[in-house]
Amino acid sequence: MNKWIELLLGLILVIGAILFAFQGGIWGVGQAAIEFLKGGIFWFVVMIGALFILLGISDLKE
Image 1 (spheres, rainbow, N blue to C red):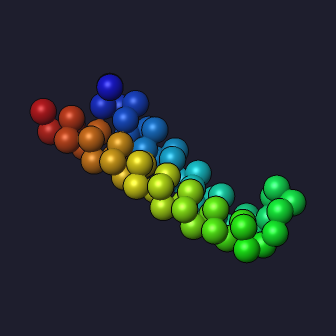
Image 2 (cartoon, one colour):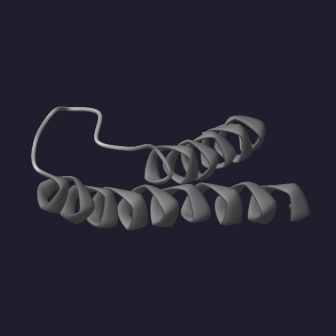
């Protein structure tokens, strides 16, 4: 993948996950289910975003 696309995609995923985590119950399901989903989705998307950021930085060095 292009190094700039990796960096941009990583930043979008990390920022999007953080914004999603601070929103309230948006799907009309129970609060416990929202908390569980936010926890899992948040960390998954943050880790994918961090991976893209690290890959982009690695490509910049080359």
